[in-house]
Image 1: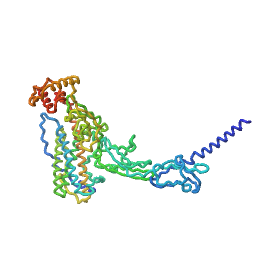
Image 2: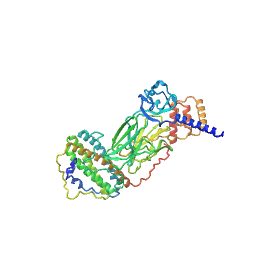
Image 3: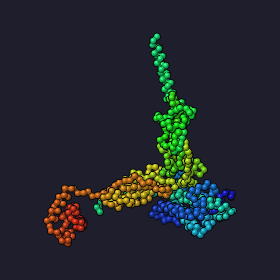
Image 4: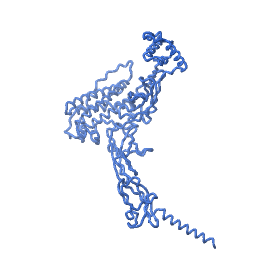
Amino acid sequence: MDLRAGDSWGMLACLCTVLWHLPAVPALNRTGDLGPGPSIQKTYDLTRYLEHQLRSLAGTYLNYLGPPFNEPDFNPPRLGAETLPRATVDLEVWRSLNDKLRLTQNYEAYSHLLCYLRGLNRQAATAELRRSLAHFCTSLQGLLGSIAGVMAALGYPLPQPLPGTEPTWTPGPAHSDFLQKMDDFWLLKELQTWLWRSAKDFNRLKKKMQPPAAAVTVHLGAHGF
Amino acid sequence: MAAPVPWACCAVLAAAAAVVYTQRHSPQEAPYVQYERLGSDVTLPCGTANWDAAVTWRVNGTDLAPDLLNGSELVLRGLELGHSGLYACFHRDSWHLRHQVLLHVGLPPREPVLSCRSNTYPKGFYCNWHLPTPTYIPNTFNVTVLHGSKIMVCEKDPALKNRCHIRYMHLFSTIKYKVSISVSNALGHNATAITFDEFTIVKPDPPENVVARPVPSNPRRLEVTWQTPSTWPDPESFPLKFFLRYRPLILDQWQHVELSDGTAHTITDAYAGKEYIIQVAAKDNEIGTWSDWSVAAHATPWTEEPRHLTTEAQAAETTTSTTSSLAPPPTTKICDPGELGSGGGPLAPFLVSVPVTLALAAAAATASNLLI
């Protein structure tokens, strides 16, 4: 593994097996089943909830990092943070993603992001921050579970880790304080962007799963009230 | 040989006249264009003429007073916009045109105002710019768009000259966009830049075709329908949510309803008989800001048709004549439903000829009659 500037995670063999080997999602009782629709809706709602939670968490964390990270105009070049899953995608490619790929990309992204967030938590200086981060990590785990549920309902296999990789987190050599903060900045930025993207992803899935809405018009009869 | 002589004479005269004409009216060279700052002083030399040459200056064909001259140079102090024009100096005796200056009085540009917005997400966004104060002289603008280190093309709007369009290549980018604009004219230069994330500039156009209709037989309802803005390219994948506001014209306070989907809503708490004003705004479900309010729709809830006028008038006459002949009845008697209900007669005549308290009693009576 090369030591790349600003890429602390390049040093981490960070595949958290606990995520990959999630307990089997309890088989939903399929009688009178509404399809994956409700669980997609739930996943969508979770992304909105997380995005809201992240806004206050990121604000607090960036203030903790201090300037320039907490300045609204801060616009650094994207150096390092190579291993962070990127939400950015070509418009046409995104539009044409099949359901399985769409869900897989989301699942893999959040698995990685959760892992990095946990690393962040370990280093966080204040108890307050650690509490907020821990809470967020729990919610993010919930999102992962929800995505897994949707994939199971649709019959898609969960992505598996590459064979032979160690599920350990090995701390790398001492890293410049500033560069570490840059990595944290990009992690939060990427997380926020992924949550926005997921909302759009799950919207798309929701639309595809829904039967065309019957035009229901309620005629209140002219009962002269 | 008499004929050639007058012809030759005419030709010479014509040529002479032509020379005089061209010398007088056609410029030695094209007018020199000069830009000067408002409020400043300027000295216009008469071309290459000596300082002590005898010249006359004119502006737009009007003579200028000699007290403005300093030798052969024209001195203008405290330039105003009205000083703009075509200045020409002539040799005083021969009226030979020596020099022309097209003077434009203006200002250097102040910092431009730049804003960008995406009303066609995820297709792209556009940027608008303008100067906060006019310069009165031509300005050129140059816009550059950077996405990280990548330069993006901003295509000029075919209709609006202070707008250009950028197409998104990638979505869900964590890298900010930086739009810079520089403006320059003959008197100066200025520039500004803005930086933003993809999501923050999303603002749809207002909903279109907002129509409000009364609902038959429902005096407190109004049915409102609208359409998603036609500029929003993909409402399926990027659904919009809507915000409706309505109030009767006579009141200032708005009622608000937020709707997460659908392009129709029924207001159920309208005041009967009052004209309403209704507007709708749109927003992407997750990102960006609300659109401006739509064009207002007006509607009045359904009201019952007034009964035929002649019957009403007749009934009123009979009722008033009967009541006047009676002695004022004791209160208890008036409240007796049996006494009043004259078999489904209209309410109006009672209200016209009877005090308010009695009118309420009459209303109760009629209501109870209908229920029976």
